[in-house]
Length: 232
Length: 232
DNA sequence: ATCCGTTCTTGATTATTATCAACTCCAAGG
DNA sequence: CCTTGGAGTTGATAATAATCAAGAACGGAT
Image 1 (cartoon, rainbow over the protein chains, first blue to last red):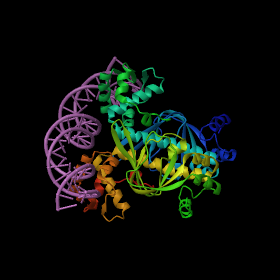
Image 2 (image 1 turned 120 degrees about the horizontal axis):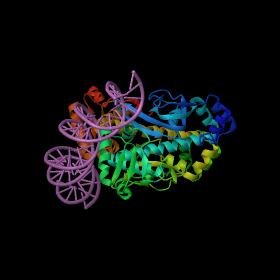
Image 3 (image 1 turned 90 degrees about the vertical axis):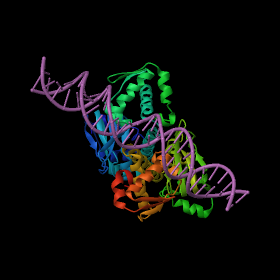
Image 4 (image 1 turned 45 degrees about the horizontal axis):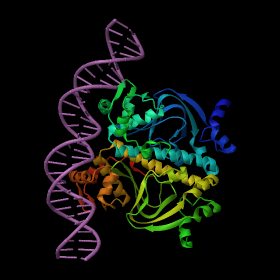
């Protein structure tokens, strides 16, 4: 690993509270790699050999059963994925696919488990990363069980708008069929949901969304920090 | 806290790898309490003041939005709940209700966060507990997004049968409406789902379930370790 | 036992969402 | 420029599940 890369990585939230020896141990077999879109990084059911951290880009976590498939989450920097499988030395529950060209930090799993047992700062960082991951899935489960697909879409739009500065005009950062899977609906249902939102003065042109009547959308979405705030 | 209680608690998976000083710190403000059914232990949105561990009994974690409510999980011994909120010093995302008379260990939150930073063994135990919790919700999200309600019920039956020794006859350990919420369906839909399962030779009498044709049920359920095995 | 409140079931209807099929649109490659 | 394949949309239909209403069954209390 190049020195400047090491510089960057050492400041990563996961490693910032590490002891020096832990850092050496962790970075020994670690590397940073660029991946093009559509690369498959993990497959569900495989052994957890690496912990992945997104330095730039976006990763889709997907899961399947029989012939069905769905998106569990979309991960961006600086977050990690499949921490839980690594911490427990178990099988991946999800497949990870690169959505857009991404830089990924890969840390071998065995040293991570070893480092946790000796370095409280690192173990705490892992615990906190996992706590965030837990809260995100728990929120997603609430989103899924408590809302209809139209409500989920409305909330996604509200959330995405806040994320992009609240200009009430933004683009959907990935394919609509991935958004559909993310929201737990068929692509056709997403199309129709967008059509329904016209009644609420939401205009769609390709990937561009313009919210003309913010109050109307927010009334439909009824966002709740306990479901929609990632950092509450 | 009584000496025999302390004896018992010190062997809890969360505390077994603690240093002696950490243990003292953690147990200072800790106590064990019995709660009757229907006690509300936490309310979503409240500050995380305690970490709860179930010593015996069963706890329901529920979440709500507008006037809708759903069950996120049912927790039994020796597991903890709301670890993530405690570790991050955030708000509870779920309400916890006592399902059946239960003994609960309550550990004040602040010492836990403090102990994590100094005791790698404890921090690791917390991380592992959280990793398990993460994997359970992730599995539940897969269950929810990939299966119909009939399939979820069939899998719950298969799972419950294994849990109770595989005798193909067992009882449902809580009210059917809680099972319905757990499975993400209306109580009426659960009734109808049970009626549908008669075609698969599953007989219901009150809370007692008898599976006459195991192969038929398993073919419908198609259980998958990556969704249904809690310890994979 | 009888009463009462709740849970559970069943029926009728509606709402929500998936599926299948056809068609448009657009971009990449020849 | 045309072709081609995938993404996205729209329509028709079916599957799935929620809601509302009424009755049955159950569990505690008296």
